[in-house]
Length: 430
Image (cartoon, rainbow, N blue to C red; front, side, top):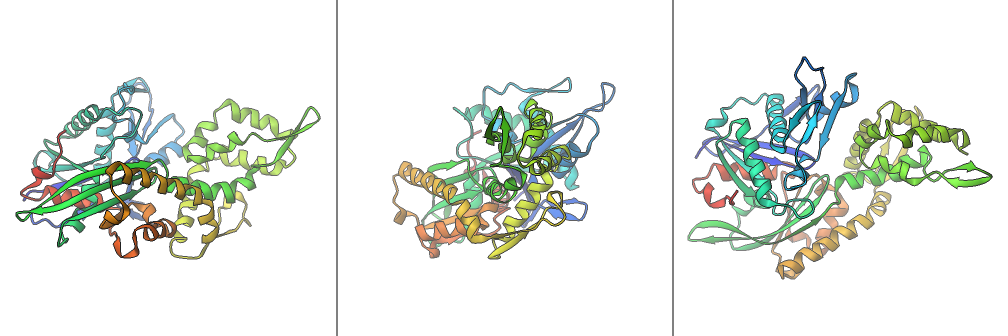
């Protein structure tokens, strides 16, 4: 057994878990002020400090703070993983410095380990990296993605690198306890995407192995659910659906202006756009100017991220409570809204239906019926949403649903695999 790091490099969040020589695992933790966490937002920023000084990179919440609070120019990058398999991505310039994909990824990893205060020798540590069964994007080039990944990890100093399918990592700890050959549906419900993988775990001669049978997914998950709360609770307070007068006619304020709330960082981009300038000019003709003034104020004061954080916290409370109070002082000191779980579930009903349809397609591609799935292993933060768990329970039966360590299960399984004597048998070609 060897010292290992299991790395779950995600589109929205990244998690790392270490395993010692005895196979005991421990998640890599981060500390930001009074908050301790294991799931690091996969965001990267660069502060331009002028031609005479090097760029200052940051990751996670420190990148977000740098983006929102710095007086200088900041380049903000997120969803980096979605570019890994794209041959159209030829690199990018950041204030005069050229960055290839592997430069961006290695910069993120270095900063992440520094922020965690993790002390290790990469040349003497095995890195086990989760790779998606299928990379995102139009006509993804799997070989290109793997080459970029490997170059990035070598830039950080790793030499012993193994790649293991993410769903194998997610279900590995659970699969070790199975008493018979089992077909498992791994549902990875994260922030940006819902990914399905169907795996067959079998034991031959005392040796456990996993065979992929099918895969699928859809770009709907926790971030989409957050936006449903914003769309129904917040945006009506900011003028969505209201009107303005023009040339004797009453017209609706263009709905596309409010679509910028779908991703918090888009509001900072919107702040410098021509559309925002036109919106300010439109204010004098609005029939409910107070609402539009509040919209403008939120954008001017860069309240996008604090808003999404408050919304996400409300959604999390709804996983344990029938209703939760949502408050956000920039909307007004007296603003309070009670969000009922039943209303929230009605808002995401269409999204759940699309997720279910994507699962239909995944099963069909694998040539399997629902009754041929022995177990359903749910992972990712969105798996905590009761309506999501209920949908799987109704379809497959409560007795088949399993989970555990939903935020760290992938990285934990990868670290355990890396500590095994037969680790190479679980790896896929890079």
